[in-house]
Image 1 (tube, rainbow over the protein chains, first blue to last red):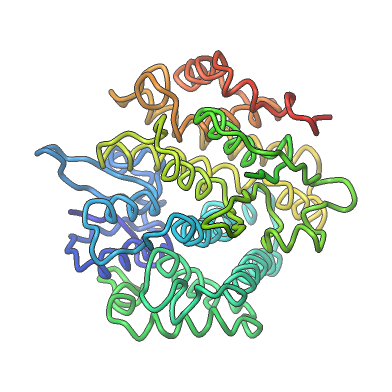
Image 2: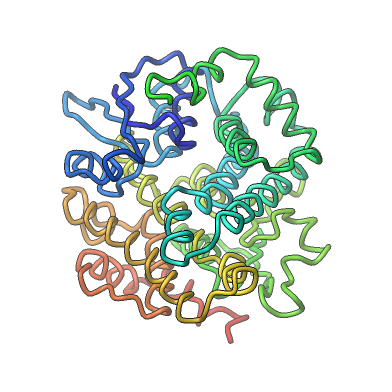
Length: 218
Length: 218
């Protein structure tokens, strides 16, 4: 397998954690989102992913190369192909709960603070750096506060988002908290998230997936 | 089952289609996103969904009421609980392909044109109506163009996103095209998407899920 990613991409970080939790090896190919006008827009990479987004996973299926896009689709694929250790619980309602937490990060928080969105805000709309930072903090803090409320109130929450084993929701939560901290978000009212984040970061699978520990880190 | 939704909510529309495709009955509870300062922010609804977002599905599991959030988590739950007719193919790479198309809509297009995001842009950032419309069109058109490219190039594309049966990706595509048309996006360069949309809208499952055909439509 090859994982096309970028050290600081939060969606690439999710897949790196999932690969590590499952003990799977992948060659990491760096697609620099800033240099050379954004390598994700190059003709070479558009063949891999017309969306011009990382991550993308290249795998072989019945001897043929296949390319998969979208971090959550990639993680579900890994879960189906390599079921153990499982990243989703077995009970249907629990599975939906964990997917919902993961999607809350992937659909409600992260897309708003994507590089291309921030570029549109500062470029096309001409907002200031201060307005940009307020925007980032607004979506991070409101989105994470809703997650805090759900996880704090749910009996299924343990050391991790679901009980005492890391899974799909943790793969999404930890990179989002990393982003929030990078942009100086105030997470002081989120003890449950902070506790889960700390538990995750005590595991090599999460530490080895961190942006600063990638070969293309700057 | 109860589906908390709003006629014009694109994520609610996705779940309505999925329920219809599977022939499942649900009581539809309207949560008006505009009236009364937004009913999704009411204390009553925050008990159902602290994220203050529709849709939410109430179901019973082992005699207990459970509430599920996030449209794609809800549809995956329906798929696991009521496998036939299937909304996902059986082959793992094909499943990832379809999930990836669905997530491209749910993570790359729709979150940017959400009501609360548009409110932040016009309210807090004070952008004009014209700038708002350009913003909406920008993300709709660029996101749908990437989907067009992928679907047009893929041999698995048929009358629907995957072969000749409607599924998860169609549940996401049709509401997104509805939104795009509502905001006068230029979709003329997207014959594959238009063709699939037309096939879907020849089916009662899609027509009955349309915003204009809901009890709370205005």
